[in-house]
Length: 126
Image 1 (cartoon, rainbow, N blue to C red):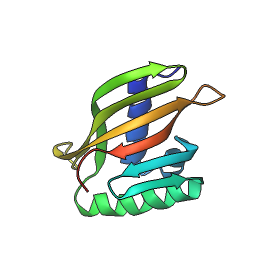
Image 2: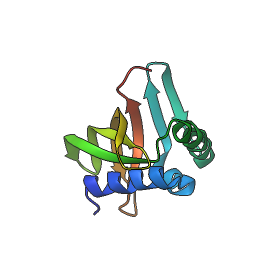
Image 3: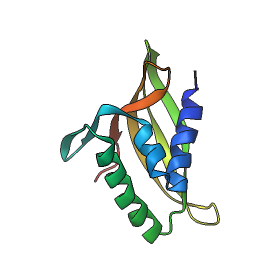
Image 4: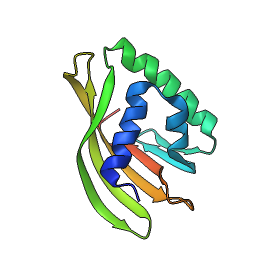
């Protein structure tokens, strides 16, 4: 099975490449997005595609060209469920840091043995 570090490297690769279909495939459905504004059920890959399409425009307009995962902390991993948090480091076109985002995740293993994001929570104020 893919390591959690490998999983988040793949996830941030999709983010960096603007691979909207890859991002839609990396989520479990239904999934849950939890933020200070409330909880939103994500029941369809189209919701994920729309969210990340808008996000690409937002990040590119701020000079963010890629993302890497760092400081990955596993709180617990048991029975096909990983719970933890990490830092997503935003990089400019020269690969220099231009900001970070802290997020918590619950990642599940599906019936085919693939990791998928089931719950995502931004930990920085919105």
